[in-house]
Length: 191
Picture 1 (cartoon, rainbow, N blue to C red):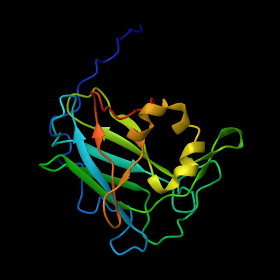
Picture 2: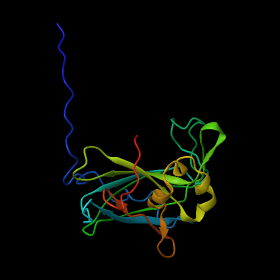
Picture 3: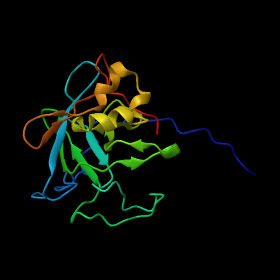
């Protein structure tokens, strides 16, 4: 005898989802003191423009050579040339809704049909009120020419592309605010 079961309904993420999921150096994609490291961070806002103090941000990226030390890289996993580089970061927002990771600018990636993807990070956002994580990308402002040719970024309406490009925020710092909804909503992708 077999039974048919329905789909388990989705539950919202959070509140307090980041508790126990972060660790002391989770935000360090590279160790402190790594040459060329940048601090990338910003603030998470909800649809009402209020800060989100219990969100969790995860980042995933290629190394500066545009490679992944992961079996899913179709070119094969490669050990990063930068000591301590792990390609993954996780940070919770603080009492001011801010998050930050220490990383290196990744290299460009091959794309379908011989195209090239501009250097970028993939970012997952987990926050209260979401039924699932939302996924976006962060592009680098100093890569304007590569960004203009990126097949994913150019698929976004021109007036919304700036929601995916970090902005300089002082020496060695880039800012990338995340708006979960509203007039300034960050572009999110289906994954």
